Image 1 (cartoon, helix red, strand yellow):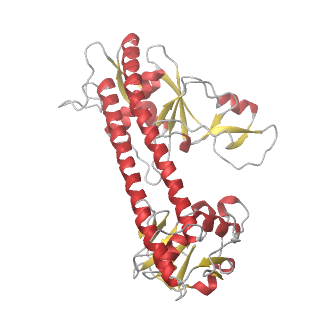
Image 2 (tube, one colour):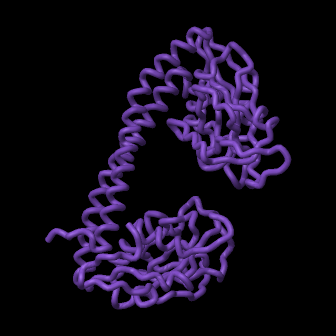
Image 3 (tube, one colour):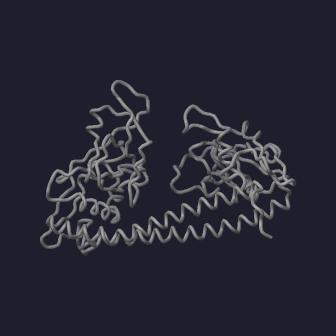
Amino acid sequence: MSWPFEHLPHTWRMLPISSCFEERNETVSDADFEPLSVTKNGVVPRLENVALTNSTDNRKLVRRGDFVINSRSDRKGSSGISPLDGSVSVVYTVLTPRYVISARYAHHLLRSTAFQEEFYRWGSGIVADLWSTRYSTMKSISIPVPPQSEQKVIADYLDRETAQIDKLIAKQEQLIATLRERRVAAISAAVTPNFGESGADDWFGSAPDGWRIASLKQHFEIALGKMINGNTLSGDEEQAPYLAAGSIQPDHLVADATKTMPFTPSELAKYSLLCDDIVVVEGGAGYGRSHRLTRDLPGWGFQNHVARLRSSSALVSSRFATYVLKACVASGYVEANNRTATLPSLSRDVLGAIRFIYPATDEQQRICDALDQRLAASDALIAKAERFIELSKERRAALITAAVTGQLEIPA
């Protein structure tokens, strides 16, 4: 939907943001006003995963009922009416609604997909990640404003309808969490049959009769990828797609060929990705996640927060080792051996030193075949639930945009 709008109800007006809000630009200390986080779900008390800083006076005051929006384009959608008094980073814009617009209506309007796209269209910056929209330009954006009575009707309707959609989404998210827990339990039971055995020193318990104990580095060559150093080509470099840490998801791989970085021909050979290679997230929030490639990725590389395990032995299959890695992460062993004080990571040395148990190759194949078959059903259910969530979010966004732009007749 384009902005501004050609057709609005005759009782509505298009008003500049400066007529609807007053900027709050008062600086305070986070020692006096609780730090808040501005997320895509709205304004909340500071999240636990946000890096803590020393008390500072360089914060912006937020009062309950203020609208707060992140001006950065890489945080698109992070905004909302604050239910709390508190403080936020100076990169946020804090707005106090004037009498012409209600806070509840503004919450839906300014978080709508149509407004977010318009908001960032007014921004500026050198590169996409630093693109931002300041209040000095934001205040000139015109927004659709119905009479106060209609604002209340719209806000009531959207509060009710979005709550129902969010409830359905939450149920599907809980289903996905349950299915993933069962998935991990099935894997652990198959590749670590004595897990949790009393008196056992290793994370896997003990080895059943006929199984052997080894470390990953005994059966796999482990390599870290290339550090991302910009997109400027030099020498014989060429742009090539690559796997990043975010490419490796809990149940699947996201191979986005449009995401590229510079590689030389020799680097592409060094950082090649072949069928049966195992890729593991080395650093960041999802560290320890793993995926086995089921086909070659010619012309692809991988970045330095990804580790590649390539078989150097015929005694342990990549299929079996991938299931072992998933069981190892689920056991808590990887987290317990994360010795990095700042960014969580799984170093190449720690990864290579992971000990595990394995049976003969024919037994490995039998275990993997059984797991593949069992997990296929749960993976299909997870994919179906994720698609439901995606469609529900699209419907939610479309509903809000239609309602706050006068394109939807609100039922009585």
